[in-house]
Length: 353
Image 1 (cartoon, rainbow, N blue to C red):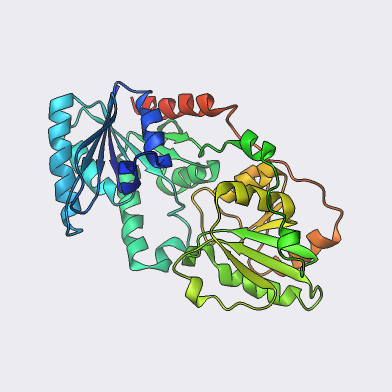
Image 2 (image 1 turned 180 degrees about the vertical axis):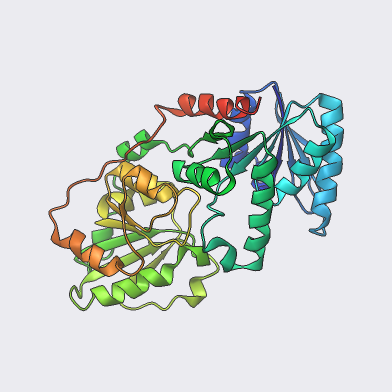
C-alpha cells in the first residue's frame, strides 16, 4: 500500500523527534509513505527512512499552503501511484477533498483528533468555526474516518448518519507498562510541604482546558480545607490570564519521567476541559494508579475516570477526599503493546477499501 499523508506538524523534520520516529515506524507498515507538510520557507525534501519521504510546502504566506500542498500532492500521486490519502487536520481536509475529487480511484482516510462536535468547540473562536467546517466536509466525503474514542464514533453516527463500517476507532498509544514501572523521582509532598492534599492538573494552558474553572473550584475548597493545593503542570498562552492564590501553584512544563512521578505522588488528577479529542493525561494518570475527576470529555468516561459536572467540581473533590478511595485502574485500554497498536493502525487504512 502506498500512502500520501497531509500534515501540519513541522516537527516531522526534526531528526530524532518523537514525531519523526513515529513516522518511521508507520513507514514500516506500508510500501511507501509520502508526507506533505505545511511549512514556511527554508525546508528541504527529505528521506527519513528507505520508504518514508517528506515534502515541505515552503510557502511563506499561509493561504498559499493549500495550493502548494495540492501541487506537490498531485505530482506525488502521479509519480508513485498512491493508493490512499490520509488527512491529519481540519485544514488539510481542504486539500485532501480536492485531490479525492480529481483522482476518483484513490481512497481517502480522514483522522479526527479533537471533539469538533462539542457545543463549545465552534463558539470558542472563528478559527475553530473554520475547523468545524473542514471536519464536516472531510467526514462526509471520506472512505474511512479514524477517531480516537467510541464517544466520537457515536457522535458521527448520530449527527451525520455515517455508516458504522466507515468509522475506525483507534485510540492514541500510551506505553502503560512504562508508566506503571516508572520510579518516583520527585515527590510532590516533599516539593510542596505546605499542602496536606494535592490535586494535580497536567495540561496545556489554553482556553479550551478551562483552567480558571479549576482555580475557582479550589477557592471554594479552601474554605473547608485550607491546606489543599492545586499543582498545575503546563505552559501556554493563557498563563498570563490565570488568577492564582496561595493554594494554586504553576509548576511549569516537565519531562515525562517527572510527570509520571507527579501522578504517583498526588491524590487526584483534575481535568476541567471544555472539550478533548482524547485526553492523554487521563490515560497516563489512571495507568499510574491515580484517580481522575474529569468533565465528560474525550476518553474520560471510557477509560474509567469519575465524571463531574462543571457546576459541581468542588463538591465532587470533597466527596473524593472524604471517601476511602483506593488506587484507580485504567479501563478499556485496547492495546497489549506497541506492535498491537501498529497492527491496528494499519487496519485503520484497510477499512477504506
